[in-house]
Each structure stands twice: as structure tokens, then as C-alpha cells.
Length: 260
Figure (cartoon, rainbow, N blue to C red):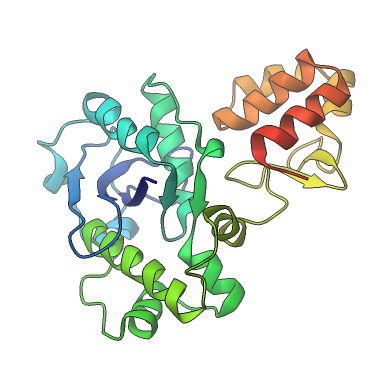
């Protein structure tokens, strides 16, 4: 079973608009797992606030390749992985999906992967930050925080340490993934939620309304969504709602996004 641990440093905190300036990828867990790190030149400036966190300046990446040049090779790491691990992974997944879309690169079907977020597991079992998690579960101080390579190495070690500490070593990837993402999310963000056997909009004019019912009565809402910065899986859900009968649509959501 292929496990990919990854971390991003970005130009800012808007997952739809901000871009990657550094990515670290680790295939597998353990000390012998190789970490690949790459810096990327964004098409927008790195914010001062972001530089204060990760230390990467615009000058540092001015001669680096853009995402359009390296995106396809990076994508393959995610395609090959059965399980994806990341600390506060929802933000990083949204940034990745936005980068693929922005650069006309085929998206990764993240909803088909097991997504494991040590942060969310920890929040449910004991709320803390990565530095605290590293000290508690790895028994040492994290000295290289807020670099993609340092964070991705620590995240993998924390995940391994957490499994031992909380007695999760025999838990399935599906069980660990369920601990990582909120149960009512449909996909890797909260724009569509699952409640009482229905997929509901969690944003805009349709907030709280069943996706299928709302789009049948307001098909132009999907036209608006296609022109906005919605993630591919959200658009796929809405497109399917317009193409399928309701029972077929709900069955598709259950199967595709592992809902009950």
C-alpha cells in the first residue's frame, strides 16, 4: 500500500488563489523514506506574512520552474499513492487542486484516496500544534518547523508515533481516514455536506438545500459555479446532480465519497 506524506509552503492563505512556492514529498514512512523537495516560482508575489512564516522570499524562487513545468511530474506522486498524509491537509489539498486547474493539468481524484490528517486525529483526541505533537509523540523538539521538508518529515514521524500512542496500529486506513476528515464533508472540503442521507450545499444562496433539488429548480446556479473558483469535485457533484435521477445521484455520492 503506497503512502505519500506531503507539505506545501505557499504565497498566502487563500487556497483558491495563492500558489505553491515549496513542496516536499515523502513516499512511505520511516527513517529510510526519501524526501523530495522542490521550490516553485509562483505567478503572484509571496505575501510578507507568508515569508515571515516559512522564510521564502520572491528572490529565492525567481529562477525556479513554474508549476506548469513541474505539475505533471508532481501529480504522479499523488496518483500513485493509495493514502495521502498531511498536517492540516485540507488546505494543502485545495491548493494542489487549484494549481492543477489553473495550469490545465488533469486533476487528481483525491476523493478516491484515503486521506489522513494527524492534526485532525490529534484535535479529536488531544488538541495541539505540530511542534507540540512532535515533542509528545516523537520525544524530541522540532527545530526545523515551517520549512516544507522539516514539516513533512515531522508529520510522518508524528503519524507513526500517534498510531503507537493511541493504539491505532491495527486500525485500517479507512478508519484512520474517518478520524482525519469531518464525517459530514463530501470530498476534501466543507462546501457540500452529507446529512440524513442527503448532499447539501454549505455555501451561497443554496446553503442548507439538497444539491439535487436545488439545481433542478435553479440550473443557472451551476453556470455561475463553473465560472467561479470551485474545486473539481464540487463541480463534478453538481454536474452529476443535473445529469442523474435523484436516487441514482445519491447512490453515486454514497459510493464515490464513501457515505452511508
